[in-house]
Length: 112
Image (spheres, helix red, strand yellow):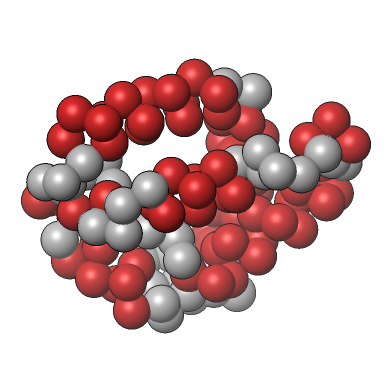
């Protein structure tokens, strides 16, 4: 709503920036996963984003395309995938719940 709705010019810019950011973090996905696994090992029981246990890590790996052939992924296909993530999060109750509780747990994002 802040960006003028999902069809606005600002929201389309968000889609573009999300794609660019996602593409950038994919280069560091292994390091990010190591850090997340360390957080889970030390604080897993108390952090809200790990309520589903190791499934949260598996879901993150899937979002980072670990199981897929990352080297064969074109920018066009990656743009489609990032748009799919955004579209799935629109009006998703868990994302709406996250934004209302964001100050409580800044490290945990649920896109699914």
